[in-house]
Amino acid sequence: MNLSRLKHISLTGGLFIWLVLFSPLKLYREAIFNNIPPQLILVLGGDVKREYVGVRMAHALNLPLIVSGGSNPEHAKWLINKEGIPSTQVKLDYRAKDTFGNFTSLIDELFQEGIRHSLLITSEDHLPRAMAVGNVIAGSRGIRLTSISVPCDPYCKKENLQKQIFDLIRALTWVATGTDPKLVTQQSLKVTIKDGLKTIFRYGLQGPDPVES
Image (cartoon, one colour):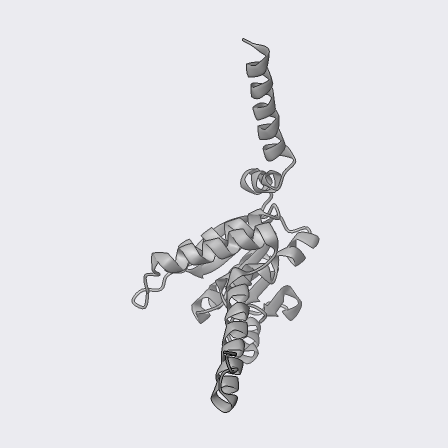
């Protein structure tokens, strides 16, 4: 084996070891292979059935519960009291506006609190997209997700592939850059519309600038 080939193999092997052990992929590896028992139950809002299952599981397993983007506080507190679990065991979080936000609004806080394994509860028709997005975002912090699906029949709605791919791209972009491309696009669109309206009003009221002959 010549020296050039040996250097190439060494470099490739070193890069692989760095990716697995020291780069952000190290946290994904930890998330996949950690054997820590569940430390938390995370319920994604959108259906009160999910909250009902989450509250009952929190009661049975004596685990803290977070409901992200769930039903109104009055209903949620009624359900908590009905199941007889202390309010200190449950956190109602309303920052998230969508599945992507369910994770980005909470994940750094969970990491700081030492959470490395969470049960994830959502409806069965929502589960594939939720787990795809969640595994990217939570995995980037070394947090493992174990899914629990809630039956949605006869109201299940099949999610289109475009929506799943778009949210996955959002998740990957957020992990890489810390930004949400959806917000960036919306902000750019607002600027474009604003500039367009300025131009319309300018030309509409004053007419275009005269062209010198």
